Length: 397
Image (cartoon, rainbow, N blue to C red; front, side):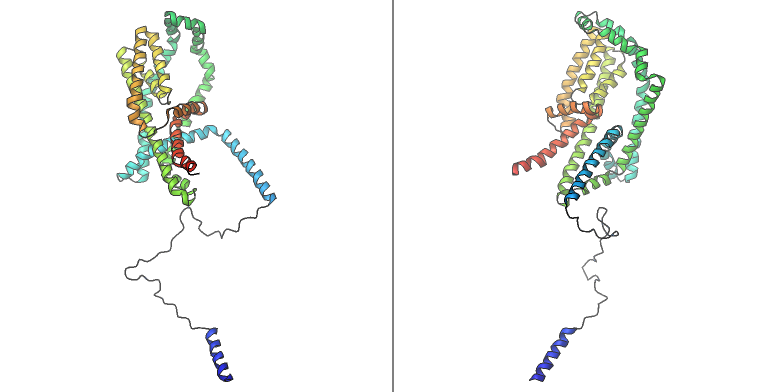
């Protein structure tokens, strides 16, 4: 019995020591009929490659580490504030270029849908914009310079003509308008404002530099638009990325639609003013049309500013002409507000009127005309985030 038991134990021991292992089959991993071969996946653009080791464990929280991190955060926040304050001019150019790129991106997408490569589509859109700008400058600068100079030269005479009207004369005398306008229209005053010849040359070359900077940045943003957008979405946690992508794409669509609509409305306002000025014999029709088109880009208050300028010129020319200008702009603004604007803008960018007015005033005070242009799409984006994210979260609590 003991021998059998020991033999059985030895046999079990031998079995437990080592079991025969099957040889690796070289056909393992081969594709079976009807089964696709699984190729090894490579890390995506936003995943670690593993070439630089495995991340270590997070540091333990200590009072010294927390205090040092807080102090470092305050220091970095102050450094960022100083950087933004010192580079505010460049940041404004970047914002303008990004705004233009968002507005022009749908044109690039349309050209790519027609079969053009991405680089060629960006080149076509950029070349078209440059040709439009150059053509507009060639058609705009000579008459604007000539007519604006004549307008400034005859501005005191126009004010004298306005003084013949008793009501206007009372306002002119009360606020001493004649002396102020003459001092502003004086060539010496204009020269001092511009800083002489050197200041005028610096102003011209600075404007050209800023325009070229905006153009180059816009081209880069258009060329790398998809990568920049995907990088922004990759910074969002994976669980919320799809929702953020949908909301972000909707915001970009609204910004582009607003830009196209604003330009269309401004061009229509300028063209209507030019035709009206020619019809009634108003002086400086092209310069006044440009003023109306540029001011019409300012939300809420821009159209009124352009109408005031043209009406004052009409009153200085002749009283019936000024009344005709006033009537024309009152009628045109009603048509624009209730017929043109809803069809072009509100379908793409629907915002609250009070919020739009407050945003436009705040944008003008912060960034001037650029802030006014960015006010409406910013309000539209904030309104979309409130409706889709913040308000539903508040209701669920």
